[in-house]
Amino acid sequence: MPKIGRLHRRITRSSRWEALNRDAKGVYSDYARFKHKIKKEIGLSWSMPVSYLQQWGLPDGGWSAGQFLATPGLDWELFHSERLGTGSLQVSYTLVDYPWRQTAADIAENLGVIAPINDLPGNGEDSFAQLTYTHALPGNKLLLAIG
Image 1 (cartoon, rainbow, N blue to C red):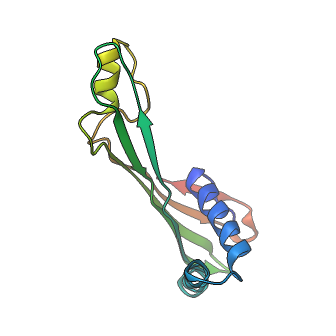
Image 2 (cartoon, rainbow, N blue to C red; image 1 turned 120 degrees about the vertical axis):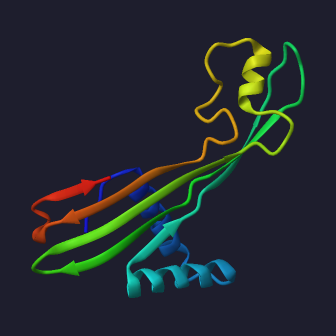
């Protein structure tokens, strides 16, 4: 079933990477096979990108800010029918944490800038980035996303 949106593109890239590594030995190949099995049996696929960004500023000094950003997402194909089409649910969450003494907002204040230095400048910026139901009619004649 074709899907639309940033979450779907991210999960598709993740699935392609897993396909390339499915035959590799070790823990990751076991995990990739497990994800493939779950997707095949119940239609559930997911990704969990995590990043760390170190941010520095100066004029009034202070500590650097370190931002952990996690953006888990899942796509669950609820049903697939020749008569009704395909229905799926997409969920994506954004989790931001600055575990050290300063946040990006503190760095921006130290620098005296008006605009934030990134899109998620402080703790508590967590949110559901996407909650969508997608329905594709048979033959993909119409694709409808609600969310």
